[in-house]
Image (cartoon, rainbow over all chains, first blue to last red; front, side, top):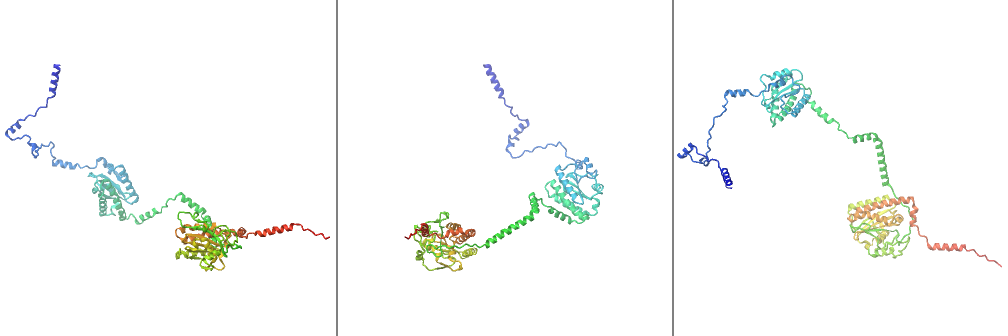
Amino acid sequence: MRSLVWILGAGLAAGAVEPPMPSWRDEDRKALEKGELVPGLSLLTEEIPVEVEEDPEVPAPTGEDIATTEQATPEVAERYLEAYFGERPADFLVDPQNLLGSKDARDRQNFLRYHAGDSEIDLFVYLFDGHQVIPSEVREEEVVERFFSTGKPAVVVYYYLGAPEKSDIYLTPSLSDSVPAPEQRRALNSSVEEAMEKPDALSQFEAFCVQLSIRIYWMERAAGLVKDTPAVPVARRVEAPAAKPVESAALIRAKEWGQRYGVPGGIMAGAVLIVAGGLAVARRRARYRFPMFDVAPRLGGSHAAGIGAVISFGSTTQSPSSQRNEVPDYLGF
Amino acid sequence: MKCPRCVQVIHRGAGLCPHCGFGIAEMDGKHGTDNVSLRRLADVAGLMKSRERTKVQAALDDFARRFPQLFFAVYTGSGKGGGNLRQFGFWLLNRAAFEDVPVDRPNEAGILLVIDAETKSASVTWGYLLDPFLTEEDTFLCLSRAHAYWLEGRFAEGTVRMVAQLGKILAKRAAQARRDPERFERKVAPPPKTGEIARRIREGHRQAVPKTTEVMP
């Protein structure tokens, strides 16, 4: 028992051991003794202790480094250059980097195809990212001259997604002679302004294409590619409403019946109307006569003694039959 | 055929009602024996407006055009006949001289509608020409057509409706009479005299008795 108590006491003593108390550093103790240090003073003052700046481990970039970094501006990766500038594009939207989603790319592609089908001038759009630049070894004018000299006239645009102001426009040689450079710049600026009004990159690209397509329409007129331009839209507008509305089956059947039975039906209806009208007229003109019989006078009346019904109309709640008077007068009419 | 006072059926040609002894002399004593000058539409009670009277007059003219032998007359009054419309109508149609009715249409061919605004009642009386063709039920049907209008005080409209209804009934009766006039003639044929029948029977019996021959010695 005593041993058990001793063990328990030893255990409690061991469990009650607290962490060691903080100890003074020598310099702090000396400062305290000199009165230079007041314990807890840092907590009682509003002054923020100045942290000692440590020397940066990474050295600041030098001018050479900055120059090197600027030279490393992301150019279009070399692996895309062949897809961009290796041959005449097969479609009107050139986006080998897949900057657009599949749906947006399909929508823009459809629009450019629609434009190509509707216009005498094709519109090719090379799409780059906003921060990208075309490598210096690629000369855009040369690409246009090389791939678009033959075939249908075209407008080639280098468009930077999210940065429409960086866009550039080039016309095929056959078109650039008839469309002056200022007109080209105005078309581009107009499209860029239209795009800049949109909030996001996709909407900007869409607005850019639409506006440029409109400007190309005026380029067609300037280049004399369209003979009778005003007649085209007017003619199309006339054609649309000229399309016959779809007739219902009942209407078609009614028309067939009308064609088949219209004439005899009309004749019969006319005959019925004539007969009905004749009967009405005959009835209106009819005169009714009564045979005259000798009637013996009654009650001393020389002309009349036909006594008919007497009806009262004093009550709105009773029927005419209930208000018929058949009571002798002397019983209290 | 009924008595206008006791509403009992009386026989054809009765000089006085066999039930109550009513005759026109009794009414003459009340209203006089002189003829009363009237027009077909006599709105004495003032139940109709001027425009309404025009409509009623047109209905009366149309009735007279369709029935060349007949005429229809309307009389409105207040307390006329002392609340006894049957007797008053009977007397008036016998004593009235209608100014706007041609002379070839005597009162025998007349139909008189009497409306009493005081007792709020109406009655119909007709002349002898119409005796075979018109019944009390016919006139009740006509009055029923007008009843709803008269309840609302629309006397002109009700009267027009009534005239139209009466025209329909009479047109039907005229067609029936043209096809079978005997049917209507039987209604007004004079009753056989019972004394005559008895005399004939007695005469027949006398003829049947064999005559006795006298034997001369």
